Image 1 (cartoon, rainbow, N blue to C red):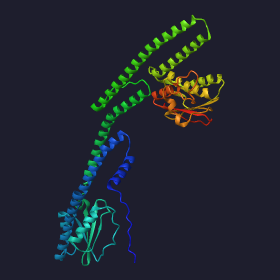
Image 2: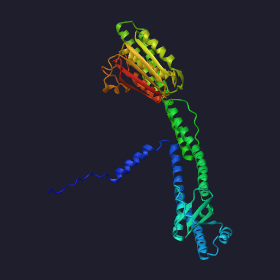
Image 3: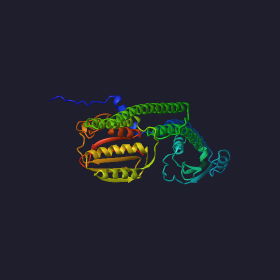
Image 4: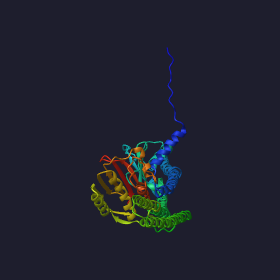
Length: 457
């Protein structure tokens, strides 16, 4: 007989299981700071109240109810002993009087009677369980109880030799009926305290949201009005953001001033060259020098436009339809077939001159290498998505990121043109990112290249 081989299955280590649980919890928990803060406040309160309620129910409520039920059962047992010890009071008139005046119990002796059939037991009743246990322990006779029929009374019947003793008692004698008041007070006070905590928490979260909105607006190139508020740490972060904003604006102003100075000096020299060439005889060599100077002027303007980035311009609501229609007419006058489709709200908040430069660069790039151009704009959501398609030769996928680098001119790429500086797409992406968006390149349905602009609107 071959020995039995047991196949071992790998058991994941405890750390892997904990990591899995942590990932599940992270996916289920809310991502917002306000919701997480509420959980931090509410979860301990709920847990604490659950523990207190459990301990109260287990230790106090049940204990008090059992002791009250034990006292009532002891009174009934004493009445049964008195009734059976002194048979001369067969009608139990004296016993009924003593039970009513001294024990607050109403008793009746039912001759030649039997116990009724058992009734339905309540789903959750501490009284029913405690009273049944005490009757079994102290009386040890057949019994029947009803704790459901009448809300403020309980009925107990005990089988004697030939009679049945019926006892009616108030529920409060055997049951801690006012214990729920403690739970109501605890729950009500907790709700009030949680409401106050939530109001204070909202006031603490609001400055953080204002700071986030200010940072997002500044990243989109929009004018902001922000004053730090809230807790000390939040105000400290707000002041740090304002100081960062001032440093960025100061750096941009210094760079712009420097570039304006450089531009002025270089333009002065180029103007001097033009005047000197104008005084010479207009030979073919002089014409070539003039073309070189014109090319240098165009390249200088392109470099300055890229470095300046139109940072001083403010974002304002702009009619996208009017702007695209104007650019479409310019391209059609150059002999290109242009289609325009706009879906959604035509009004967008952008820096008009910078956004126009972005679109001009993309359309010029498409017109330079294609005959047919398709413009599609979609502004149905919080984002503006704009496609510029053409039927040109396109750009290989491995070179599509290279053309966005400044001064890059590919030998066979689309931005290689006579007099080009290699800054058209770089300027366009720089403008898009200054608005908080980006530009990507992909294959076009027309067979050429598709430039996709995605901006927050």
